[in-house]
Length: 283
Image (cartoon, one colour):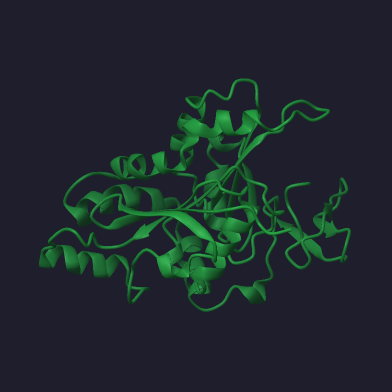
């Protein structure tokens, strides 16, 4: 449990066999298990639009992925879900991981693991693309840990139901208060939900906090491509898909202080890719 931390005080957690909760050894906070997963948020913290969206995701999680596969080409009149995912995954720069981690000395138990976090992992639709990229990254014997966080138990249950995702470490949590230690992950990414977050700046800052300094953080969500002309059909379907957001766009103005190497691209007509890094934190 050295990766997960108490969201009240960021202290370490203890889990005893037979117990149905994690206990913070610093402040004594108790975090229950739900569906066998650590639940690292307080229900009172999930409010407003976050609570509304969770109801949608919990309501029919098994239909989420088929709906995405159908609606992306239907609404955009081009491309596909696969093409969209293949457009933004390269921004994680998985091919540079081997060189980055080669400078990290081995511990008593061998090389430290490469850790990847997907915030709002949902049903795990990005994980096959992530694993394919990691397989080509030339990491050799270095162990890899893939972590996924989501506030929807329904979506996480769908993720767990897939045998190919059984090796992924899943945590129920709030993107505004990530239950992880500082500078833990070699890559952090999020797809398809930040436009509906109640506080985008807080979520972006949390992703930067748990990422190792200077590593790329990638965020993807809806934005009409500003460089293209759009028909009335495109504008109406985009409005329908983003009914929860008055101004869907890349939240560059909400990036944490010190963010650099900021890049905004269109992954497709309806979706942007935002990449940024945050450097070494002051002592």
